[in-house]
Length: 114
Length: 114
Image (tube, rainbow over all chains, first blue to last red; front, side, top):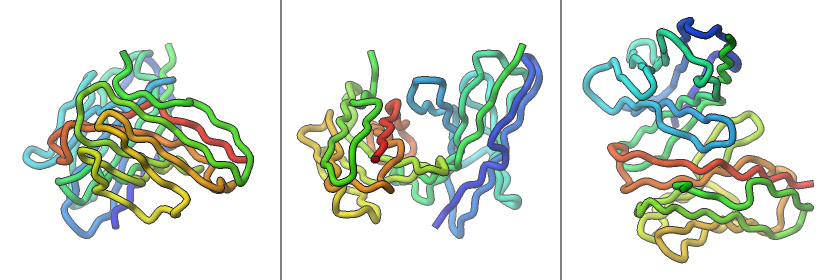
């Protein structure tokens, strides 16, 4: 069974600074990896996903993530954050390409300050 | 227009009661899901329906029963509520079952059992 660890529960960051959110997973088989964002009072929204191919994945709103199989990581980055990036970010993994049987991490709360 | 809507957003109820959470999607998707976010904020899948047919049924107490009257709705009924059922429940939908499609999530329903 797969599991996901998000190493930081809270990340405060200043506007226009870079941010990295760390995600590690454990699985004995091939994995498919996701980052979701939840803005206040909204549902989860897909930022990006890795299914196959290039290990560097670009998503919406200037986010990108890199799949590192040897380190079992899928860290999320943004070079310059905005106030509007304040949200909760969830990393998720699936072991099957055929269904959304996702296991999520506990989330990282990003607070962007001016 | 909200793509995936859940009602109610908040639900406080006493132990032993029976309650339902409703989910509707207006995206024309074939597949719908229920996820549970526990007190440690881990989201795990409970059920998935594709074209009104149950395709994922994780190890969930029998007190939980999903019902899909049509493709646009997947309601969650919970009988004999227990304190441990307190959680945030998320509904989601996707065009198909594969990960090459995108799953859209609702805002969540916070259930508190007292």
